[in-house]
Length: 370
Image (cartoon, rainbow, N blue to C red; front, side, top):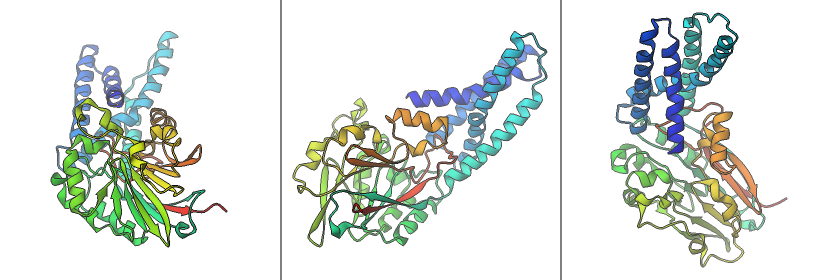
């Protein structure tokens, strides 16, 4: 809820700043500012709900992006104007500053939206595992998380992800949650493409917070129907040449919300009960913020997502990092456990922009220490 309020405040600042500084009669400025504010909120509502066709959603997202990206520029301008006012300097006409800021913000919004909607590329990441058996040296896991398929997604988006994943011939495919922003039967033409993922040792998933928002039970049943097994407080054991690798999965932390009573809470003791002693453990946990607690267990590698890498480099990414207890993107060493936080493979309707934080299909390559 905090992030939604912060986003709305960010979207609201620019309309109010524009309306109150337009070169029109003073009495009309508050009315214009209020009208622009309601327009900004309406745009954000349309993005959150995804109720319009794809083309209309992309236009609405760009308009909202102009307001979002213009906010820091208008804030800096207003600080300058405040100083000039306090020093009793003449305040110049603001129509040129407004036009320049909106043009610059329009470019940033267009580039950010383009960067977000283009399909992700495969990103190879080598992970050293101390207790990795020789049989699993070079074992390749493709990790896909946060695809957020919705009406905003093109018909080829998820198919491109599936094709690029299969092209690297992974040993194992793991899905990290937030696969879609609607119920699976509302986006069937897209989601059934997940059934075409292929890996020698199978395809497994664990849920993200968005599965709880839109038909949790339907998502689990759907994944099962296309041959993808969901790991909820349990593990499976992969055997190769007599060696063993444990793949474990937790429910999402969203289970703690009172709206979702009756479903299992994350329980790592239950998840690892009966796991082969000494075998390396790969844990799927959608949100990275409890990695320090999970590192107290015999886990070699935790795979997470949720953050989208912060989406925009700089202050936005820093805020996301703080909200996730210091984890936002890439590889971290947490005691004896390695944490990898993926930037995610898709985009969320509520914020359809990426700047210097590309989406990714993560190819995890397990390696023995040198």
